[in-house]
Image 1 (cartoon, helix red, strand yellow):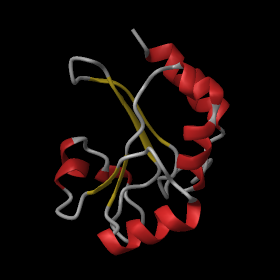
Image 2 (cartoon, rainbow, N blue to C red):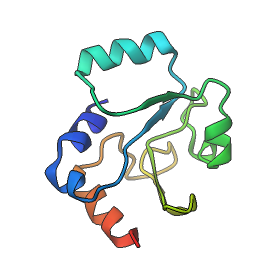
Image 3 (spheres, one colour):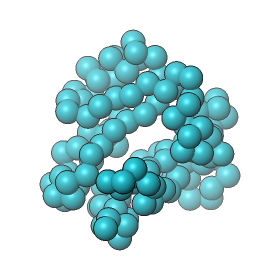
Length: 114
């Protein structure tokens, strides 16, 4: 959740004028608890209880041991097409991480914005 808060509050990320949405398997109750705990405001927190969104974007190939998607970022362009997708937390990655510095994500997104 710190990732969401840090991105949302990052001026360089805000300057990109892209939407930020969190999609997770967490229950509504868990999402609400995390929203309160981290003071998340202004970021849609979607619940993918049936895993249909994760399957549609093919991110389950990077799932962690629990079967949940890893730490994956997807940039969807205005026409609804994936412009960029990158997973950072898959268990088989030697440089696995569950937090990416906002500056790195801003750099990646800038490369793929049209």
